[in-house]
Length: 361
Image 1 (cartoon, rainbow, N blue to C red):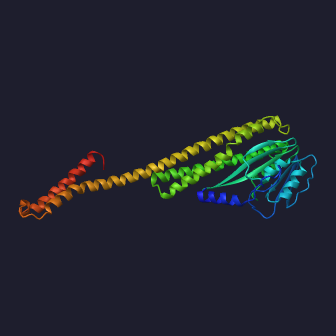
Image 2 (image 1 turned 180 degrees about the vertical axis):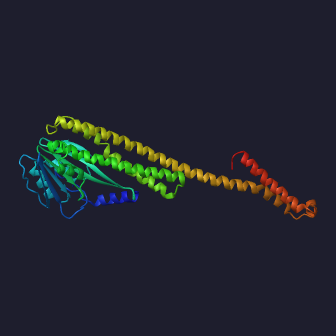
Image 3 (image 1 turned 90 degrees about the vertical axis):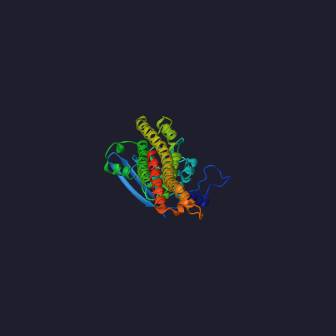
C-alpha cells in the first residue's frame, strides 16, 4: 500500500457520509463506497437432503423451507432501506444494523437478546502493486438464520457454498451456529494467503537488497510495512472476538461448535504471531537496505580515497620539479626525467602494496 494510495484513501473517506453528530443510536448511515449499482441478495436454505438457492436484485427472496437453516448473503450495503428491511425481518437490533452499514468498525462481537453480530475484516493483497484492499464483513446469527453483509459484488464465501452444494462434510448436518463459524473460518483462512504473499515479497526484497539495492527498494519496504501495520490493526482485536465466540455467552452457540471455535482461536493467535514476525523482518530489511547502501557508499569513498592518496605524493614531486629555478641541479641531469618517472612508479607500487597488506584493497 503506497503512502500516496493511503493518503488518497483517507481523502476519499473524508468525503464519504459519516454519522451526523447528535443522531440517535441506531441511525443507519452507510460510510463506505458504492461498488455496484444493484444490491444482490442470495438465499441458501438447507436441512439434510433439502437444499435450495435463490438470487434477487434489489429485493429479498422468499424462504421455502420452514425448518431449514437459512443463509441470506447481501452484497452491496448502499441500499439502506433493503438492509434495514432484511434486518428487521429477522429481529436485528438497531445497533447491530448501524454497525453493519458503518464499514469503519473494528473487528468485534456483540451479543444481543435474539442474535449475535460479528464484524470482521477481509483482505486481498496485490503483489504487483503491493496494495492491500480491505472489506468489512458483517455476520449476524439468529435462531435459525445467518445474515452476511459484504461491501463488494465478489463472493468471499465460494468455498463454503461449494461445501453446501456438494453436501460433503458436516456443514449440511449442523445448525446456523456452525455455518457462522465456517464463514468466519473462511475469512481467517484467507489471512494465511495474504501473509504468504507478503512473505514472498519480503523474500524477493531480501534477494534484491543483497544483490543490488535500488532506490525503489525503499518504497517497496515502506509499502509492505504499511500493509503489515494495517493487518495488525485489524487482526489484533480478533483474539478478543474469538474468546467471546468460543465462550458460552450466547445460547445460540452450541458446545460442539465452541470446540471448533477454540481451534479457530489458535489460528488467529498464529496469524497474529506471523504478522508480528514479518513486521520485525520488514524492519530488519530496512536496516539491511541502509547497511548495504552505506557499505556501497563506503566502498566508493574508499576507492576515491586510495586514488587521492596515491596522487598526493605524485603531485608533490611534480610540483617540486615544476618550479623554474636556475640553480636546481636535477634540471640539468641527463636522465632526470626518467629517474623521476621511476621514483613515481616505485611510489605507486609501494603504496599499492602497503594498502593490500592492510587489506584496504
